[in-house]
Length: 250
Image (cartoon, rainbow, N blue to C red; front, side):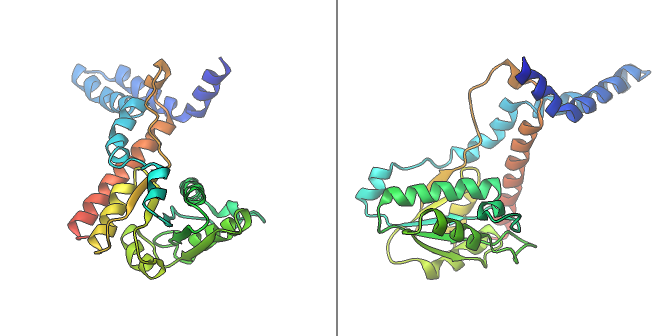
């Protein structure tokens, strides 16, 4: 019961918006006006349900699957490239305070993968905090964190890339000969792989992490929530970005 109460309280403003839309519908004088008044209420309700929001995100996340670590070892893969997902100014002595949720998930996946690939594995971190925030050296913060947690791991970083399309050119000087693994969020992987391929590099081996689609649903997932709207925002933003990249030849 407590979980249901907290879930309702966390989405209180969304419920208030829906209630206001429903109230406008009842207050409308004419039937036609009532129909138009209830449309946004129904639309937000549907889009804010987890099964619907995940339906938009699922095609992006399912495009690539993780290869087995044993297969990567057998192929002699010893390079892992991790793309940043933004960053913050340090807010404490902990370097982890500079990482966004996405950057933390990508970094953790990349470090674990590199450790499993063996002591010869090289971890390459790429990116600033993004367009308009290039002064924040997100990849350097990630490298500093790796040096604290895994000091024996070979780590390099570049902080010039402010967008997905800039990673390939800036990562290339850090790469040794041979194939490499690309680590980024699952929903971001199709755009990242496309950028590396269009840049003329040998296609990297995709290793998606940070999966957002859960897939197992209960009756409570039919109730709208801000967390579901966030998944919808991730999906729509990625589709728009992919469209822009296609139009600009990136």
